[in-house]
Amino acid sequence: MTSTTRLTAAQALVRFLAAQYTERDGVRRRLIGATWGIFGHGNVAGLGQALVEYGDLMPYHQGRNEQSMVHAAVGYARQSNRLSTHAVTTSIGPGATNLVTGAALATINRLPVLLLPGDVFATRPADPVLQQLEVPHAGDVSVNDCLRPVSRYFDRITRPEALIPSALQAMRVLCDPVDTGAVTLALPQDVQAEAYDWPEDFFAERTWRVRRPGPDPVELAAAVHAIRAARRPLVVAGGGVHHSRAEDALAELAESTGIPVASTQAGKGSLRWDHPQDVGGIGHTGTATADQLARTADLVIGVGTRYTDFTTASGTLFTGAGVRFLNLNIAPLDSHKLSGLPLVADARGALEELTEALLLHEHGVDPAYVAEYTQDKERWEQRVDACFEAGDPDVRPTQPQLIGALDAVVDETDIIVNAAGSLPGDLHRLWRTRSRDQYHLEYGYSCMGYEIPAAIGVKMAAPDRPVWALVGDGTYLMMPTEIVTAVQEGTAIKLVLVQNHGYASIGGLSESVGAERFGTAYRFRSEDGAYTGAPLPVDLAANAASLGMRVLRAKTVRDLRACLAEARDADTPTCVYVETETADTLSGAPPAQAWWDVPVAETATRSSAVKAREEYDRHVSTRRRHL
Ligand SMILES: Cc1ncc(C[n+]2csc(CCOP(=O)(O)OP(=O)(O)O)c2C)c(N)n1
Ligand SMILES: [Mg+2]
Image (cartoon, rainbow, N blue to C red):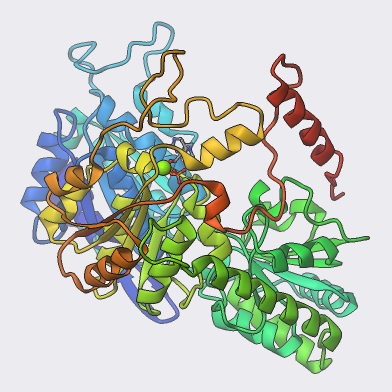
């Protein structure tokens, strides 16, 4: 007879999670490193009690907001190369639905996170309970059903023993390099506290091998053939290069063939910025070098990329005559995009096989092609130098100068975290990535508020490395609360808080699409009713200090350099607050090198919109469908 242990469903889940491991390339690590939680009646007596009962098995972190707990878990998971993540437990109702944004972010970025929202009673002793949604036509719907479309696996555990198969499926999905994303086990509050006689084997240590599937020989042969036939090939490196830890394999392919490598937001850092074949970011926020190569490429080799609209300039970037795509991706969904030749495989192994096959043929691109992009890259780097430089160090910095000042204090150990605003574009174009995982941009969901909690998660995964959250004022106001968590846990994140009194990014976009910066500045209302008055007298530096951060205020470029250097040495959570110069003419940043489709009003009375529409129609006419 199998021996059993009598535990509540919540206790069993905690013991189960503490015994799960991943293994890849001979390295074994815990799958669920810790659990974040905010307690309410939906989880306090269930998972809350279980976490205190098994405090020795499962580390716990207190968060301030359910969404930001997911961001922290996601930051941790990405920094852990998807081999380890955190769980997040919430109450029912608002605590649970606060997870939805975080879940979407995790799933879109293909990063594993385990969500454990409480749910309404399975036994329905009193209907409705506090915070229960009543759906007149369906008795089995709860607010947690909002998590279904944003989860890669969803289950509601309405009997304790149903946890056994479901928990195993949940682990399978978390560890699957194709399927991974948010995994949700909704836990009715009565079931969490209900006892069951669990088979001991359920709690045995289990190791989930994260697979590296090799390429199909026919697909590989076709890929080699396509590369050998190409005169102007270009690699587009996406996040999959990092997830697979394929950076060295990609460098070897690039070095041995001379094929240049451009990168998406998620793929930046695949090669170091000063690697001869690195041509920087691609697409709407790309470098002139990469975008020019993209326009004339005859073969685009996507490696681990989803080809979002930012990468393809909304379908207008890859315009070379007869351009074709070769898509190395572990996910069949991505490998078939843009009617490409699919090469469905783990990036690292497949890149190694490609390199080997190409070496046999002594394949290399034309030296004239190498000379062309090398010179182009030199010219681009001079532009970057120019906008980093400060003519007068005693005035307010521009945003590129801020990036330049940060560039000057970091080394290859620093990690920068960012997601939304005008920084992602500037960073994609300008940042000089020094190590494979230095550039942590969440641009799948580009979620304002990701940065601070994610930096905490990154720092938990890389405690010895300086971790910088780069945050605009709008983003700060959306989600500053996890600063308290960093202070509480002694997580010495660094925050660069950029004050420009509103949404510089969306303001600029608004102007370009004929919406006249409407609703994008943080200013008082003027007599005419618009927000065009003086900037609001908010002091975000004082706000960060009030939450417990050490705050250094920088007024000039010179100050900023000193403050960043001081913050870098700090071993407590430290904020560098800086007001930036907003006049676009002074910023010196290179403009967008490629388009992005944001539809403009087809009819309007205001001339700004009419003009913007003419420009829009011109761009639309350049779109290519790759069939
Ligand atoms: C949660 C969320 N809401 C709205 C948006 C749309 N959005 C993108 S950038 C931005 C403004 C960001 O402002 P700020 O952080 O001050 O950065 P800035 O644009 O000034 O650089 C907005 C509203 C978003 N990305 N995420
Ligand atoms: Mg701003």
